[in-house]
Image 1: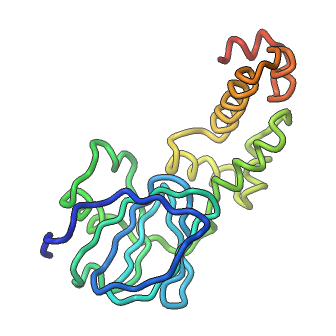
Image 2: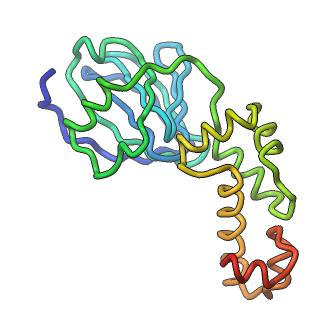
Length: 205
């Protein structure tokens, strides 16, 4: 395959979205957030666990419920890009920052993903943020995602390199820092973000 296309670009997508087609293929590598697409009438999505091949000439629409960042590689039409394909992204594929050849190697080596339930981290984050004082369990989080606890742990490890409860903890601490900067007391913040005592929150921070 010729590598005469432009260097990969990190693009940011939001709710505005759009629709177009172009004479070259595109390969999308999810970085964070979820980008939802419709390619020639077929629904697809890209997040931090997967990438997507959009064939040359394929009309496609796209939008993100919240902001999504995607690394986009433009390539000439070829047997590797002649059909829509969603593929798995290996852990650590972004380190160090990949160039065209690295991304092409990832594309060619990555297994095709069968259709599966999407883990929408944006929706889950919103649910957790709305009830940070709750005693969240892995079972609670799994039920919110319509996944088994085992499957949720595996998907979190693949997408974020985190355990599900570490994800909750990070959301709590982010919110705690925001509230403290707004002038709330440590005791008040602790109760709002799910810590029984100010000393426990102070230690976590």
